[in-house]
Length: 194
Image (cartoon, rainbow, N blue to C red; front, side, top):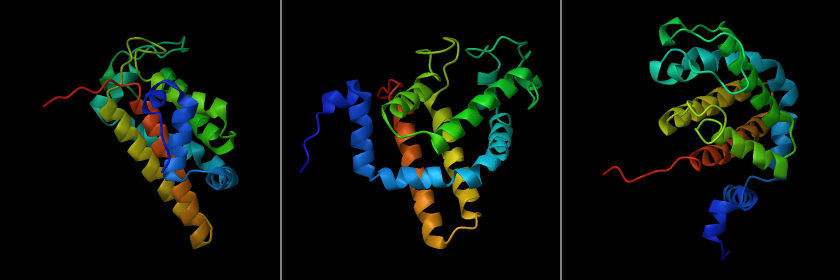
């Protein structure tokens, strides 16, 4: 039986990542499968981003988070949720971020810098980083991660891979996205609502 320092899980992101990866069985073979999918999935990133934003902008609960100024964005702001479109400058700015996120997942080494990146992805959606006015509720982040998981599963399953490689690639992404989801939820204080 492995002994886990549960206090350290809350303070040491690398330790937390190693625990999650070990527990889920996310290892070098999974990272290699994800990276090997880059030639197939890379050209599909624009489609994945468009479909994701189509969904995000179709619900007021998710669209409202694109009205306040995003950290690093200097252009004109949308005038309100009802006026948001896929072509608004700030939406295009956010789409570029999601494109880079997919590229990071596909091309980056799964090392300490990647762990810091996964953690920042979680933090930036809260007032703890970026614009303090942006505080995306955890339920919206969970919805987004579920959407991304399903979209990637769908796209991978349509690629010209043998069944075993397709399944292993899908499983690798699922493990990675669950790790990412943990690095999102760690930035939310969950209180007992009963």
